[in-house]
Image 1 (tube, one colour):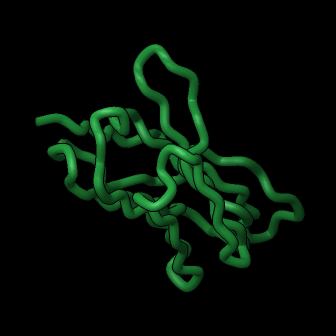
Image 2 (cartoon, rainbow, N blue to C red):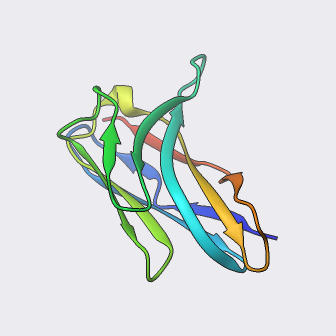
Length: 121
């Protein structure tokens, strides 16, 4: 059974930085696109950034120029570097990936448990 595990959330002051990481546990054969989403209280979950298996990236307008998504295929890890954080970035951040397990023919969609990011002075 594959699980996505996120880490790196926390409390940071406005203007500060955090780095989130997402990695699967279990026997993974292939990982397709990986996305970071966030959900603030009372709001819908929104896509923050996505990276394809070939390394192509796309960002929400609200984070362009401040956030960078990257992946290390050798370690099956995807990171989200968040700089110049603002109070409106406060949310639970979720990792989402299409993963094919070892021995499986199809990819399935997986979500992490979420990690809290709070930007406050």
